[in-house]
Structure formats: structure tokens, C-alpha cells
Amino acid sequence: MKCPCCGKDVGLYEMDLAFALPDAIHALPEAQRAARATIHSDLCSLDDRRFFIRGVVYAPVQQLGTLFGWGVWAEVSREVFLRYQAIYDQDASGEPPAAGVLANCPPGYERIVQPLEIAFGPADQRPTFRLAPTDSDFYREHVGGMPAQKWHSIIERHLGSTDGDTKPS
Picture (tube, rainbow, N blue to C red):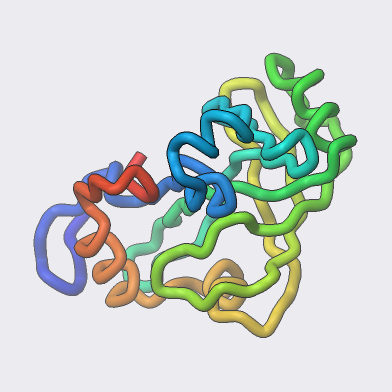
């Protein structure tokens, strides 16, 4: 598929951007992070008081007819965290949705408190996050689509990022 902004071929790896860690953990100096955080590729905890699950928020990209995936983290209750640990290697498609709050600020958006619903699924897929209605651009684009020019600028800015925070996955 061709980028409507620059005409280059668009690869599948350019259709998502992932955060390696929740912002609260990423912001810690390395020594504090090692002492205070328990980190797994899909689960993290901070001080055994804050709990995070990794998932994906999808947004349609206008003019491309495809979805862009934000690989983000949600802060959840201890109960939701422990339940996800218990079903991590199972098909959890029958699980009821769980509540969380977005734990990353995607580039190009303002930092807000963004509630979300977590839909668990097959063991080989990360949970899907559905944003609750808010008056934010992130929510509006999750529902109505992201302009291709915005997607293009995000990918151009973060493709090959080496800071360990966001990167195409």
C-alpha cells in the first residue's frame, strides 16, 4: 500500500508503535527502576502498589483503510492484574471486560486521564483496549480515525527511535 502523504510503500511494521514500559516506570532512573519495578513484556508492577497490563488501542487511518495499533499500557487494579496473570496462557475470550486507565501518553496527543475497557482474548494476542468516551483527540481518533498526515508524521518521527520508549513493533 502507498502512503497518501509521500507516495512511499507502507510496510506492516509502520502500522503500529509500541511503548516498552508504562510512563511511570520509564521515567524512573535505571537504579530505581531495577529496585522498585517488576517488569515482564506484558505485565509490570511498581512498588507492588501500581499494576499495569500491556495491550493495543486501534485507530483507523483515514485514507489508508487500515488500522494503526498503539501498543500501550493500562494501569489496573491489583485484582485485574492478578486475574490476567492467572489467565495469561489461556484463551481468555470469554472473560468479562476489565477497567483500566491509559498509562502512556502517545506522541502527538495531550496527556489526559483516559479510562479504558480491556478486552482479553486468545493467549497469543495482547488484550485490546477500548477507550471510554472523553473530550480528547486520542479518543476521537480511536473512534473516528486518524488523519493520514498525522499518522505519517508520527511514523516519520518515531521510526527507528532508539530511546527505548516507543518503537514500531
